[in-house]
Structure formats: structure tokens, C-alpha cells
Image 1 (cartoon, rainbow, N blue to C red):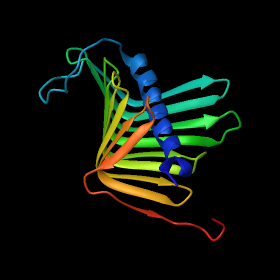
Image 2 (tube, rainbow, N blue to C red):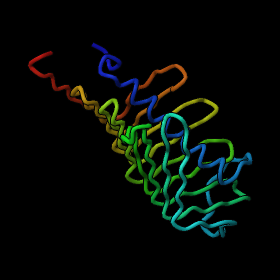
Image 3 (cartoon, rainbow, N blue to C red):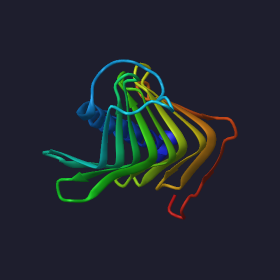
Image 4 (cartoon, rainbow, N blue to C red):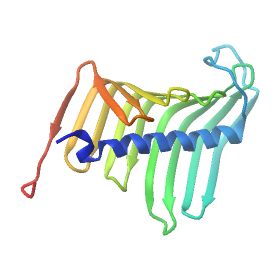
Length: 188
């Protein structure tokens, strides 16, 4: 059996979906086009405290909250502190949720999440945890590092120090110190 047989591919698509929600949030806050990291001594151009945004559609809603949002025009980056999101379907059930201590979204749609990154897909009964996740928009690549752990409801648990996913091609791999388990029930 392959990882796709246990729905591992769906985890990658849900993580990608999470980055789409963060991109929507970013477009709400600013839309420019550069790359870089936030300078330690740079003052933000905009600051929002206790940020809460709800995007509603026919299929449900997405709620995004952050303790603090800072916008840096010169670096073209928006930084979300203690960020959380929830996707809720049309009947009120939470289908997808996640959080991170810090998320940086750049004008070129690249993004970085740090510290306690957790994404839970309730529909697929799966999750991904990492110390660090980076989204590279142009390459459509998701990179996780530092204690990356993927778990599915079918008993597959894979962890490693580095995870790379090519979302466009639906390929993924763990590198550097990989370990995993597969728990099969008596019915399998």
C-alpha cells in the first residue's frame, strides 16, 4: 500500500487549502510584491490588535483570528501573531482548523508559519504538526521542518525532521531522520 491509500495526499491538499485562506487574509490586509524578512528594528506601518475576520460563502465560512497583525510596507510582509483559523461547513460543523504562533505572508504570496504549527482536517481525520512550515507560491511547494508529524485516521503516523510537498504534482517526501508507524485494525 502507498501513502495515498491512507489519505496522506488529502493532508497535503488541506494544508494547501490552509495557505489559500491565509492568502485571502493577506489580500485583505495588503497586496504588493517583494520578498524578505521583517527587520528587527523596523516599525510596522499598521497594527491591528485582536483581529477577527469571517469570510462567508454558500458552503460555509472561514474564521481567522490573530492576537496581533502587523503590516510592513517596505518589506511587503504581514505578520500574524497567535493566529488561528477554522473552516465551518453550511451546517455548522468544523471541517478544518489550524494555528501557529507566528505567520508571515509576503506580497509574492509566499508564507512562513512558525512555532506550534498545527493543521487538523476533521473530514479526513488527519493532521500535520511542525515547528516550521514554508509555502513557496511560484513553485507550489510546501516545506516543513523541525519535528514534522503527519497523522491520518487510518493509523498512519509519519514524522521526520524535514518534509517537502510539491502540491501541483501531488508528490511529497520526508527526508532527514524519518520514522513512522502504521496501526492496522483487525478489520484490515
